Length: 148
Image 1 (cartoon, helix red, strand yellow):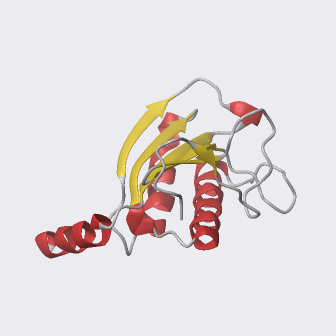
Image 2 (image 1 turned 30 degrees about the vertical axis):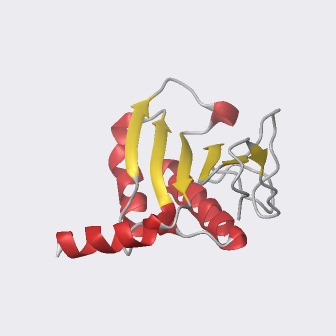
């Protein structure tokens, strides 16, 4: 858990692929967690996942899931996702993988942007924001009741 300090600090992770450039993959600030843009790197091989837009989306979300499990966080704590895709015509593939991963939880607010290129030749990049405050579980339960 991050400290209650609002000063940003790096969150160490053993499960994410090592950064290829100079940036901090995960930053905590107060009750918020910011996950830098992730492309579909396989944490074992360090190589970009195959399978096109759907395969890359699945790998990114699998990496996110490993991070959440490692840190003791929950997908219910995700509040924002930003999605960048260089093959916007294949966005239905991205949505199919997204819908599978978020089948049992309310997905975060999402912005999707078509771009001309991404790092390492990736087709998809995603960044996430989590809120760890105590009201998250109550808000999620409230949304579930409202949706039923």
